[in-house]
Length: 115
Length: 110
Image (cartoon, rainbow over all chains, first blue to last red; front, top):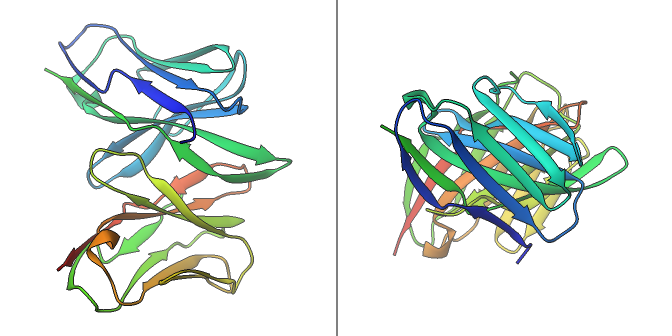
């Protein structure tokens, strides 16, 4: 296996509460990503990181923040969860050489329900 | 957002049949990837195609990248129940970001 784990696997939280999802990799890859997957929308990029403390926004970043203090850990935080953030969240890592992305390795996902 | 449309959205076939799923866009991509996702798991990379017109084969799966690098197809020969899953295409733009299609859900009935 590629050595990428997500925690927790499932979470139910109340509207307005903060939530943090964790992604941990053992591959020492530079790039890490957070996606959400929703029916009819496929996978959409929330934020990504290209190194320690280097992050950037994806196409659906509103309401989310990220942090990467170590190469192996990438955290996704919902500052104040809303029902529209109910989704399955996937972390991914990628091997890149130069300008080429050689494909993602995804974690098993976190199913988040905001009630 | 660069839209990638996949068709059909759902496909249910008998074991042993052949099938083709499509991934289309109005945008040009520097590369395109196909993934398969099983319930409760993350997508798994099947193949990357880079050159317009490129054809890659992976056992019973044949992947083709369109000449203009705007579309791709996945053909499965003699489908098996183990091929069941959600097939996703993802196109890479010049900014090294990938945009995913909404997927084709394939069910192969024994």
